[in-house]
Image 1 (tube, rainbow, N blue to C red):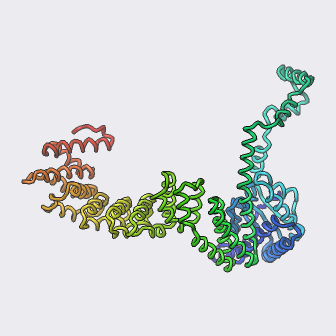
Image 2 (tube, one colour):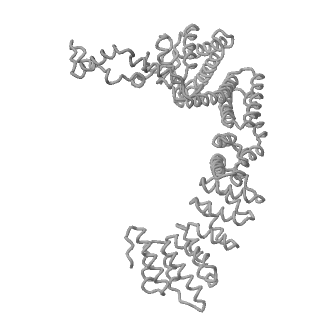
Image 3 (cartoon, rainbow, N blue to C red):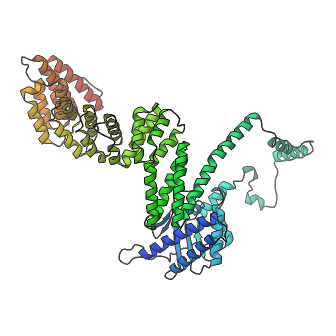
Length: 589
């Protein structure tokens, strides 16, 4: 193994200190060809014209890079190759990821040196192919390259990683461990226990049937009925799942490496039919897997092949247009979809076109599990694209609007504030109230501004909800306006709920002026309408408790001594609660 200690591949821009754009583009191109070459070698024999063609291109691109550098070195991350701090190749599918092939065995750096020829390149690529075709936990690329001893290929894997790997895979049982200092002493002492065990083993070898033979016979005894049933179920599941997965992976691999645009388009057309067939069979796992892999190819060809990028964009549009919303809704409501987890994973992969289906399932799903999963799907989509989710809400469809507001209330994303504000203009008052409640969860100034405006709404319930949630700390102007409103005679004629909400809004501001005003209300003299005055006084006591500042506590103490009978009782109870909240043990005043 060669450990490289000094980088000689750096190509930096003098102005910015960043890698030279030309060198960066060249390395990206080389690694893309490297990946395509390995993909072709996994599908075709080594002497196939396609394999030979890509090997020649790879060597040609490397030699072009070596005109200005002595070597090409990349760092290896779990799913990416990195050149001078920039990601130059990425593949997150660990089943075929080229970076992961090296990363899993502890390789941290890989370098090609100037002077590599076609024979050595073929040896290197053949080694990579052999390991790539093995199960992930079997092959070891570091060990395989070490055995090849390639002159113009360098790599670095930390010794501690290799040692830990050997320790895990070749752990020696304690009874067979040898202490070197005893081994080198020239004698071996046996304890009485060792001697007795040795003679017992000698006697056992003379028995007619050795224990080893019994164990061997038991190992190959016929299976019982239960074991045969389990084996049959396992084989049936493997026959049912593995072919689709392997077939899909092979088709995606072909699409990934195909250079001819007409063939690329034909494979995409086939995948459209495959996707429709999987949906009809309710195989949502493979349908979602296909869409995910198409997204990866889309990112790979973006900026490199406009024709392929457009073909994939058209493919996605066709998939969206053909989304079988009614059929899937019917199947879900009739409980014909058995894999609900796979189903909602597929909806998440589809994204925006599945929103209406998700909303229908929230409202009309056949059971709590389906309705709950549908709600979480809408919340996920709200985080991903709140504007798309907001378009479900319509004044003519209050149920969908309620569902959207509920999702926005759960995710608490400030991006939803403009949409919640729009819902306030809808006719359905219950949804308007829900939108106010969702806005009230935000301390954001834009949300609070809307609530302050609603304090003057013509509808009492709307005004009350806004007053219950508005935050007036640090807003003396609005507090002064509310105090002025509460001093008017008509304020006493408002409903107990509205009076209580407005006075509490004043109290929550925490200002000294608010505490002083609420004190005057708590001690307000009774007039002819004693019931309404009593309601206002008690509402003022509750507002002082909401204030909770030292000024409010002092007013409550005075009220507990000098107020009316009901005000005294309410003030004492408020002081007890405030004392308990502050850890004061709740002493009565």
